[in-house]
Image (cartoon, rainbow, N blue to C red):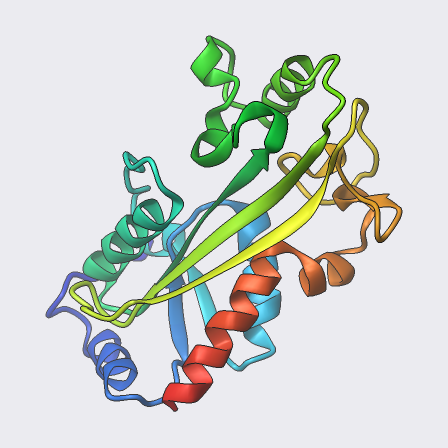
Length: 224
């Protein structure tokens, strides 16, 4: 099993981090998440740009706390945590579903929406609470929101920040078998489909993460 590489550890990790700091193209980045769905999406998008993505779990990096009330603060906390423990550049996202009728909820608490009300932490429980909270609401508008934070090293004073919004409506009943999280209940009028009905390639081209990542890759290209 791989050991966590501390700062001052593996020379290859140091070289990768130094290259990122000096403006050289990023070749290897740690994803500060153990979410399999996010890893699939980001790996597909970054792989096309020639960047190898490694899940932090492969390097025995534990999950970071997410104590902040904003997406950007949580994303930065997770990215710095992963970079500090690996010596590699790190990418983190904090994302969630924001529903107009619920005054932006679940928001930063999307992953534990049901848990906050005494339920279990699962996609099924979160979706059940969402549908219950929206019962009788005429305004079904909402959007997925994503903030990406990329740090070249743990103390990077100029992290790259990007964001994306994916607008849609909330359904009363699930549709589709793909995706994860709230995807079966997130309907996209322009595509006449839920996010869970989209083929992965279609979702990867239009999602909130795709929008944010394109913005991030454009920033990286400017620095090269």
